Every structure is written in structure tokens, then in C-alpha cells.
Image (tube, rainbow, N blue to C red):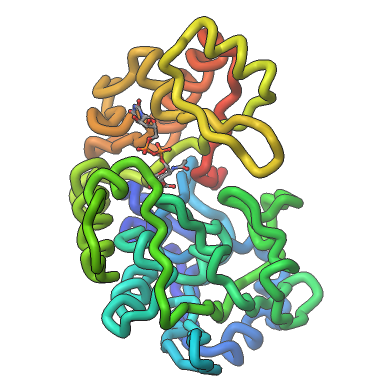
Length: 341
Ligand code: EPU
């Protein structure tokens, strides 16, 4: 177990903000995590479990304890003729899992290739791309409840998954303590892959092609992501800053009259999901630099720290975007990125 005081989170947030946390703890087993959760001093502290910090915006230094999982490993816990169940430590890099699945020809997460972050955070966030969400392959998620000190294994249904949301993602939004800390994620992968290629750009690339391999899909996804999204190692960013907003069909019909090209997708509950990137682009932000923050020129949903921006500056640009989209379209954008005040 490693506990550090006044620890720099520069390498633990992909916006590259030079913030500090009062305490930082890394653990490589559930026992170590349990020990620290029972520590009376730390029970009084604000807590924040993080992966790579690829979805966080630190507005200030963090006056509490940041937990980072070093629980690793990928283990087959069950195998049938059709499927393998893979139990993965929360601290595994998500893309290592995607690469491992593809190299074994196990289908289900090839479309989720190259998403930054770690597996525990991926399950909290229900990461999604190119027509697939992590929930589609989730079998169970194991997590500690740091308020009740209980460890539970949640079935997919009990995880209460929605678009970029889950029961682990503080709907209860307690800024003081996230109730859950995910330790292991078990996914069910298929040995007889069914490809998901309906998403625009993937569809275009594989149109008419027979005998597609999982590796080819992974390679195509990596290529598309590299073309559209800035590499966080080079440019501080957290992927999509906002979620794609959902509107009632009536509001969509009005918008469609005014903006015939507006992209929209049907949701399972009969609503319409709009493309936040399109709305932001229409408001003139795409490629714009505001102080030390840039709105990405290939995808307006991504805000980039050009080097010396702080959390306030990035948050201010996000506020400007929110206001402009609200004024022009009457649509409220909700950040996908979690603000840490
Ligand atoms: N669009 C624009 N201008 C832009 C950006 C997008 O007009 O600047 C339009 C596109 O032309 C397209 C539509 O908006 O018609 C959707 O764009 P895109 O396919 O790039 O996907 P997205 O909805 O912007 C979502 C996820 C991404 C994920 C992609 C691919 C959210 C918030 N974002 O983006 O996830 O990679 O789909 O499936 O749902 C992330 O969550 O960090 C992330 C990168």
C-alpha cells in the first residue's frame, strides 16, 4: 500500500492540470482497500476514487483522499461453447482488455478499442462508442460501499446502467464521498462474434466486405479515433466534454423545421438524442481558441488545455458553450466530465 501526502495529480488527470490532493493512496488488493476504508482518520476525509482521470475536471486542489486501484489481472471465471466470462481487476487499462479480447478472437468490445482510462472507471461510466456500450457485455461488477463497508457483486441489472450512467456514478451526487469503489468487473465475451457495424463511419469502411475480423474492426476504430480525437498524452483533454442531449419528439420536430440537417438518433424510450458536437459547431465554437483553451477543430465536443489553462478556465469555456447552445437551440447540455470542486 502506498499513501502520499500533498501529491501532484498532474499525471492522474488527462486535462494535465497541475492540481494536488491532500492524500493519495494506491492499493493492489481488496484487503488493502478495506483496511484504509476502516481507518478512522480517513473515514472523516472526503474521498475520490479515480482511474486515469480521463473524465475529471479539477477546479481546485482536492482536500481529501484520492484512491487509485492497482488491482490487476484478467481471469477466465467461466467458459461455455459460446462465451467466456472474463474477470478483470479495476486497475487494468481498458484498452489492454480490448486488445486482449481481440487477440483471443472474443467478440463484444472491439468497438470500444482505444478508449482511454481504466476498467473500474469504464464500468462506472458505462463507456460507449460506435454503437456499443460497456453495459452490453457486463456480467457483474464488484464494488465496496464505503459508507456501509460492504462488498457486493452487482448483476448487470443491479448496476442500473443508462447512457454514461450507473448506480456507481453518484446519482446521489455526494460531493463528499462516492459511495462505491469498483474492484473487479466481469464481462461476457462471445466466441462467435456478432459484429456491430451500423455506426456511420464503421459502416462506410466495411460496406460490402465479407469475412471481417475483430482485429480489422479494432484497427478501424483506432484509426477513426486517432483522426477525430486529440491524443491526451499530447493535448490535455477528457474526450467528449458534454453528453449528447435527449429531447422530447415535439421539441425535435420544431428544431428539425428550423434546422433540417440536425442529426438525431431514436432512443429506447421514444425520445430523440441530438449530437452535442453538431449543436456546438453551429454556435461557432469549433476550432475556436479562448485564452488557453481550444475547442477541437475536428470534434467540437472536445475541449483542449493548450498548456497552461486551469480548471476554472476550462469550466468557463464550457459555461459559454452551455449558454450559447441554450440560447440558440433551447437545449441544455450536461457535462459528461465530472467537476471536482
Ligand atoms: N458532429 C458535428 N460537429 C462536430 C462533432 C460532431 O457536426 O464537431 C456531428 C457528426 O457529423 C455526427 C454527429 O455529430 O453527425 C455525431 O458525431 P460523432 O460520430 O463524432 O459522435 P459523438 O456523438 O459526437 C459520441 C460519444 C463519443 C464516441 C462517439 C463514437 C458522447 C458524448 N460521445 O460522440 O464518446 O467516441 O460517439 O461512438 O456520447 C466520450 O464519451 O468521451 C467519447 C469520445
